[in-house]
Image (cartoon, rainbow, N blue to C red; front, side):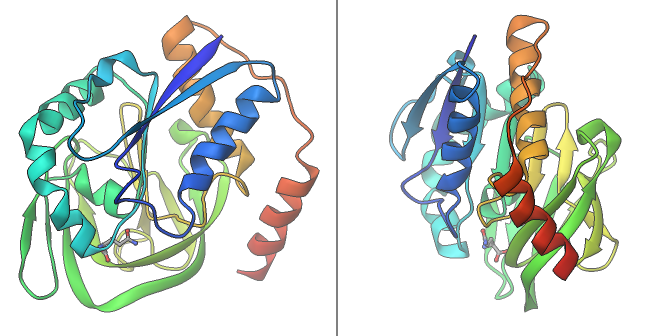
Length: 241
Ligand code: GLN
């Protein structure tokens, strides 16, 4: 078994070590003797998303989000929407998460029309929401406790077709007001969690990998790994928060 992972916009969306999520997914597959192929999809390159098994999009500041708008609306928008509806697993972080939604209006009134692949929208606020935080994923999203790092001014609201990825236990999450964090729609997992997210949240990483493997092969199981170091990092941060 193998997974083909598409790393979308690695050239512009890569904050706070988001690339570590790609390394983590790859390594956890390799440790189990499973194959992995990572393809970088920068600005200007044709997507062909249907040929992958999982798509990863990292975070970026308002500026980077504006830089990629033109490229996004030159065909990738349609492809992403089709892949999402087809059940393609996506992990999208912060700016990449916002980008899958309908729009982002910055605090100073600039509007980025995004792609409406999931029914969310984001409006910038004066106060940045920064810090380590933790949240409990919903049972449908694997149910694990996740620790991460957030830094955003955008406040995200979810439409009725989209479930929150989880419930904030400490920190801000989607907007610092309604207690929700991230979004879960079909196999799309959107979150504000940088850090990178996956190395210190192995259960969440495995949930993603299993989602992708099950979609591709019909049924799949993941051998348990020795996660002593990963869980030490996870538990240490969870206890602090
Ligand atoms: N530009 C977005 C915001 O501040 C996303 C930032 C990020 O990806 N960290 O809301």
